[in-house]
Image 1 (tube, rainbow, N blue to C red):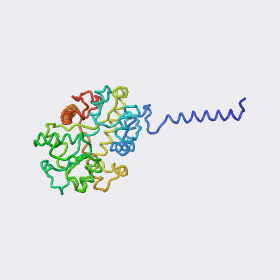
Image 2: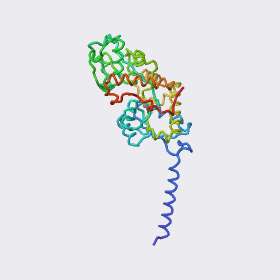
Image 3: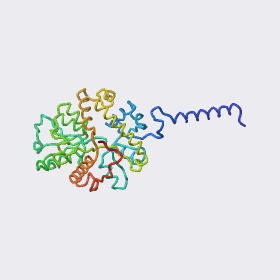
Image 4: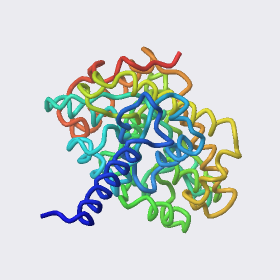
Amino acid sequence: MTTPVRGARRLWLAGLILLVSLLGGCSGDTPDNVDEPLRIGVLKFGTVSWEMDTIQRHGLAAKHDVAIEVVPLASENALAVALQGGRVDLIVSDWLWAARQRADDRRYQFAPYSRAVGAVMVNPASGVTTLADLDNKKLGIAGGPVDKTWLLLRAYAQKTRGMDLEQAVEPTFAAPPMINRLLLEGDLPAAVNFWHYNARLSALGMRPLVSVEQMLEGLGIDTVPPLLGWVFAEDWADQHRAELQHFLAASQDAKRLLDESDEAWAPLEVMIKPESEAVFAAIREGYRAGIIKRYGAPEIAAAGQLFDVLASESDGRLTGGVTRLSPDVFWDGYRQP
């Protein structure tokens, strides 16, 4: 038999559970017309986290009637696994990865996040001022044997100088921080690294030898394509078209803010942990250089041209046997005039 005290307790507990469930369905950061947040997979210390922080700090998701949930992950591989396993809805990757997935009947699509930026950096003390000066010297490479900038540099050197870089230089592969250290200490005369590491090098007196934009131009690719972008499942995008468009609008607003306002960068300094104000300024300008100002048919066509160069130069290793970059990789729900 239930006593009056036990009955009261059960009634009180049921009411508490109901109250918690009702409160749990509400969030001050979630617009009233959004049921589920978009789950964004980001590297814990990656550049995408800077943009997500800006979106959340300035209420840009709510402005565009979309809710987001940032899911921090530890590595590029973890991002891919989380997307494939349905733990997250979007990650930042490149159209090469999306194309390889589609070739295996996993239908992912791409919307632009950042332009292809980067450069070969040199230590001025090395005396290297032209590509020819790299002959019989070491070249540091952070991304491995099929790093996209390394492949692009090889194609550029062959076409514009008739120079076989694979034979002319001694590739030295290492992690990005180690590449920077070796270049700064004079153990490497030149290096290929990711853009934010190049920004640090620039602030510390290193100089660009040739930029990715110059390489593309030398190869006859007049438009700089986006290389990194938001990648997501095609069927998911079909079901969440409006939410995805709203999120991309919030993302663009964040980039515009970071492009126009130095003050917007102040809260990010603790995340970036720059070695000095000069390094912080260089990273800020490097990020701005990668902001996409236009995206449409010319940029998609340029991506196809770049794909052909990378496929040829890597003998298909980078492209996973995919022979053509299908326009279907590029989501039709976003263009930037």
